[in-house]
Length: 361
Image (cartoon, rainbow, N blue to C red; front, side, top):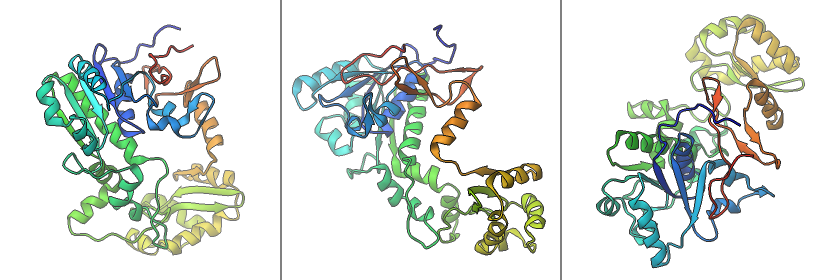
């Protein structure tokens, strides 16, 4: 198979990754996507993510966030392991790590100490609260501590988590982008990324600005949109659909269909339950297909609430190579979601513990 002509601005750059689970591994994975030689440092037992659920090919989680890398086993609890890491860092362009600050201190891998020993190295450190704070943080903790779990809460006020690790994923994206820009700039940088700040920037978003400027927030709204109403998930005769009918131009089209009385958007948001009930009184009498057909004809944004397996089949049919690439042995490698002049970035499968970069076959 000829190599894809996709961007490789980090070709020739070496990245040492000492991280675990999701945020650090995804940051390094993005650098591998764009050409970097990524060496994943693992203890003899491997990254803890390898113990999470999977099948005969290994953990689904490890295989989602570690493509394009090679693995090297080092026992950092032993002097020779730490010396070997120092030799690797001396030849590297970047170091990505999401160990807690206390662990970094015990290993003498704190940012200032690393910069003194390796002045040409870009260092990206990911932690829960910043390098000044030793508390351990995980994605779900950051969702709660940042206020997102309550902002995302159910209508009865109970907090609600996202099960797709958004803080970890966005932290990896920010760390990978920041590290890549520093490496391409050619000036060694010390990057300190806090998961709490990422949660504020990406999950709170407009709510953070509103609170900062003295506004108050509405209570948790479940599946309702905070900026428009009626916009939510509605029951149909055979399932559920989402309709974004709350923006004024869409409401003007939807209102006559459901027989609702007009009201300005602020009132619709305040009385969202009332307007949602009017929408659902109409959708309950229709199949999903009938509702979505009507919404398409009226140019009102709407979507089918699909089971994941059905959704994946749909996504695969949209563009070649979407979702994952199947290898000859039946293993799947997650696909990079962007196309460059119609081509995807090729990804090699997650390496075995201590193994080299695997070839796609």
